[in-house]
Length: 210
Image 1: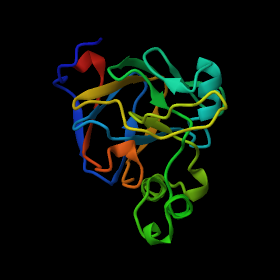
Image 2 (image 1 turned 90 degrees about the vertical axis):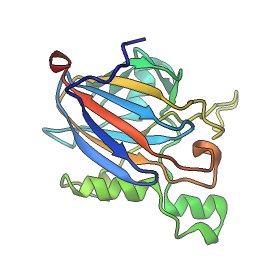
Image 3 (image 1 turned 120 degrees about the vertical axis):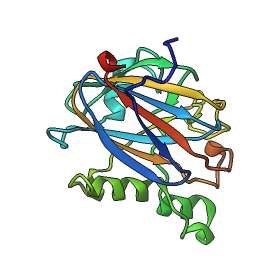
Image 4 (image 1 turned 30 degrees about the vertical axis):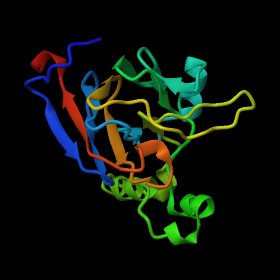
């Protein structure tokens, strides 16, 4: 594992439970996402900062890795077949890139009309995307850091208790200038957050300045 001491030059962002965040990551910079309390899903999207029509592709990422999960050494691919980020270190073991983001509509179908008013990751993504000139149609299938989604032999997905413990992290290197959108998942109707959404931390820095 990499040295996990906090780089002196790192910009640190505390993301409260349930809300979104977005920011720019420059090429060669590092981004570290820390699950402060454990079992918290962090839904994340990446876009080329120079042309947001190029964005994270779950399908291309799965194909490049020949795996539905992302971990150390994985390359996160764009819809144009370019490497957007490389996972440098991961203290959990794998991260989901199949289950997508919760939405008010999906919550209603899965859990009943009484949850229709609850906030969802898709809402967070739309709010953050608007800050960068994007809209709802620009929200694509995302990666779910720390989310535990086993796939059975018939290809069915399940969302079960997360594997991450307090302080677990994933660290990536940007391979191009990026816009990052994060939804610190507000889901309380399935176990992806242990039924209790909690804060996470994001650190961004340039290695030579650390």
